[in-house]
Image 1: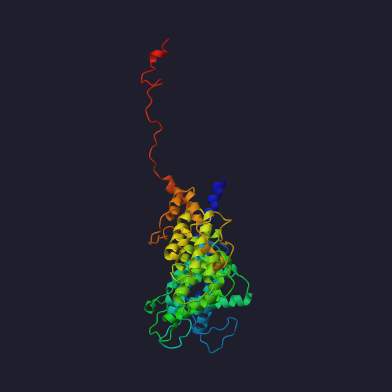
Image 2 (image 1 turned 180 degrees about the vertical axis):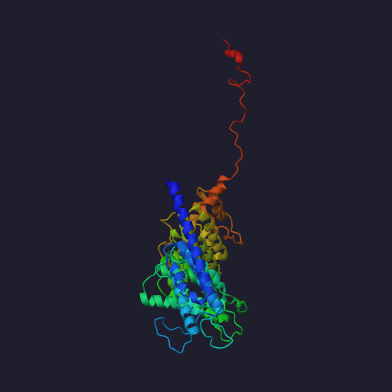
Length: 526
């Protein structure tokens, strides 16, 4: 009975939905047939505020068709629109009054669609967004504002501004909608105006909330600006939503320099405010590849990166990428850079999510043969000490890392060939707690920890540590393939190893008393 009742309810809903769609289609046809039926537009718009999602979807599609027709037939008022409750002058013709009335209805529809971007299911939100972007495309072809000069086109900036403000909502996560919006950012003019509008939104919201951390708003902003694919060459700027008959020389969306300028401005405004830790990490992850190369003055991010580098922990590790770009490509001078890099070497560095990236960059920073010997020795010794408690998959990378440091700096070979090398912590002059590499006394110590690792339980680690028994070759070991080795991979490698069968007896058994037929069935006969 319950199942039958459920089927009846579902059937009634389907009938109700079909009736609504049929009713809306009839109303739409009546409105488009004669201006005398114009007031029926109110009935269509009323469905946009319904509590039933199916009715709202049908209304959105009908409004899309209705106002597309109005825009194409130029039946909407063009220019400044007076308030609806404001009395109109008698000099206006009936045609002008009608177009002003339809323009107000269009504005009401847009307001409802903006509201629907955060109501009901994602399917309806997506439909509302796509309808609004369709209106933007139509307004680009059939402008509702007067162009400044005859041959130019007018970009519907105000409508796009309303859409961007809804995407950058302060209290609602818009990530899914922003992903859907990305396809429109392929238009060069949409990308340019979107960046300018994001910048305005950041300024407006933070002026209102002072210096409060706004996790939802800031995450929405990051999601939107990080999805922008910046052009590399000016001749690539050719895909415009608004077709320009004759582009003026100062039209900013067609200038790569202007794209870079506004891109730089929006990121600088975003990063100057306090960010949640999770978002801080996301920014640092993409900064060196997606942000710095497209800025006019990458050095503007020096303060942000040095502040991040001084935070410590994973934040400092992630800041290394950006600092590497600024140091090597933009001549950034950071006096205490290596001191800070040295302090980042602690037991936790082997277990953080970004340890592979950290050691890749550390290898690059320590690749110069002009570094002081005491500095290289301090890094080699600190890594050796930390290796005593490191997991085996990390040791397979750390040991070659240390050996490469010694290969680059032959003066450090004394660390593995010191005759009176200490074999325990008590007699080792190295000061592990010292944060200043020059005062750590690493050059007076030895790498006895590598000798200890020759007795490690994992055979691969033993083989790696045995390299110091013989003279080190001059050829460096490529550690790139070792950076991402996981414990799972090591385990799988051991499991898949094939071992030869081990014989358990030297001679085959020849019977209980040494003869093949000592015992036969006859012995058990009664």
